[in-house]
Amino acid sequence: MIEVWRNGPVENMHASRRGPSDAAMFAESTALHQEAVKALTARKRGYGLLDFERHLLDRERPWAGAGGRTLTDLGYGFLGDYKQHVKARANALLDLNRHTCVHDPLEVYLIPKAIMYGRRHMGMPGWPTIVERIRILLSHPEHRAWGEAGRGAQAVAEMPSGQSIDELASTLLTQPDTLPVEVLEWLSDHLLYCAAPPYTWCDTAD
Figure: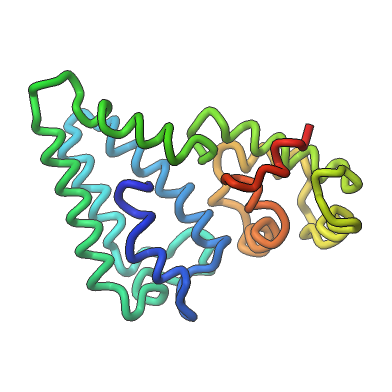
């Protein structure tokens, strides 16, 4: 996701008035993780990467966590730059995939990047630890890792009805993009910043 989608025009979309919220960025990135895995494990990886590119550039596909809004809705003013960025990065991966000088050149290229920039993202070894920390913090609103007095109690009090802590943790592990928008917004307000460095207070949540 960092290679093709993040760290490009989507960040400008995210910062704009009409762009995706923090919750939508989290939900869409986790949904796209599944699509990226499909692309990279396809029997013909080149076709898989092209399918992934088409998925990213589909202007009528509702984004996860965005309340039904599409790329057209969320990317107004940035669509040209976004398309150019996605195509350029996808083409770079396609070109790399054609090299035969090393075994599986895409793996050689992508694994170090994932380790450097995505160790705490969904699908990586650090993600279950992050989810467990979130479960602990919600189970113990007085935990010192909340940082501010009353912050944990406020988060628990504002937790959308119909959600149990264990069910939430289970969904976060595998399908966070399927959570209702109001739950994603609540997570974004109180807990999602725990899922990425440099928020080291999460490291004390044990």
